[in-house]
Amino acid sequence: MIKAAGVAEVTDEDFETEVIGAELPVLVEFTADWCPPCRQMGPVLSALAEEAGDRLKVVQLDVDTNPETTNTYKVLSMPTFMVFRGGEPVKSMVGARPKRRLLEELSDVL
Image (cartoon, rainbow, N blue to C red; front, side, top):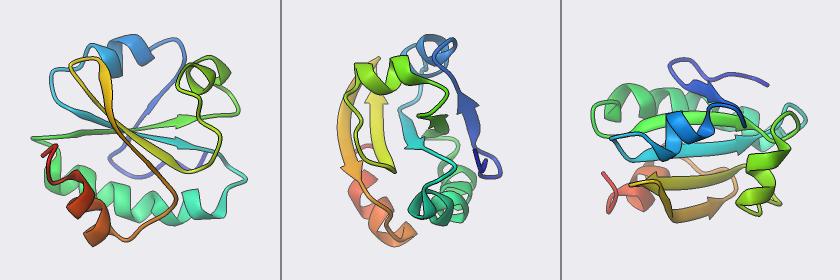
């Protein structure tokens, strides 16, 4: 998986702790190495993590190596972004997008 700088990687094993149990809202990018739009989102997620890190936790989950979580949330397309708050998914977005649009879509969460 192409890891974005400043963005934590989560797995099936630690998803419960890192995402479900997080105090802050969490933006999860369901991603894959073979997905060009996912790679395109790397710099966007890094910038978002840097700018909003005090209000939002940003993590990535590789769908190929973490099928349990991917199936639990019925993720079929990459990249899929899900926002979790209080352990529950509260928003879902599919596809790459510029940072400005991502921030607009996250404005109700931030």
